[in-house]
Length: 293
Image (cartoon, rainbow, N blue to C red):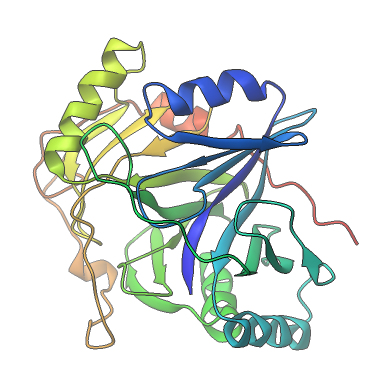
């Protein structure tokens, strides 16, 4: 399975789309009904769907897989008693079918089998994201969430730190992470960039557009990626990482003791500026849209 992208509901779809097309660099691939779809350069039908709605909400993190993979997840989630939707057809790029399932704190997942072949990849450049790399959820109980993802959804644990757990479903170090919080809402999503030069150029491009970085530049411990974080005009925190570590089953799961920094440092480089107030405020902007019974 692979993380394809994220679906967001927003009261001002047009403004969000303009930002994501403009300084963020995604490509508009069409609107169907109340939803606009945008792709990155990887061979994926789309990376972000922006749905017109009455309030901001995280609708789903969508994973694509074979029919056997998706049906296997469906059977395990049903057996585990997780709330899930009926099997559905989706009128969207890729013409998928599949289902939604709610995690232990309502975090919304969707598992899809695509009918249409993936589009060709576009030429990667410094101005456009390659793909959605990961989604991070705030959680009150990350160990329970981690057990659900590993035991039921089929993910593997890559690393634990003092405040986060990182999980994978392919060769990316993590596609989902859980961060300790007092509330269960979206923490951030990350768009992988071509390379570190693209991350730095993006910092300049976003600064010129009025959206300076709220954390970065730096290099993380888990995942070993370079990074910069921004708060989008619609409130969500979005990250631009590069050089994300690729791993296999030989990767040794890290512990909090594996990831300790000298006082005052939060990454390998130790040069990043960080606006904790803006980062915290962004984590309150996207609750999860409830899964209908």
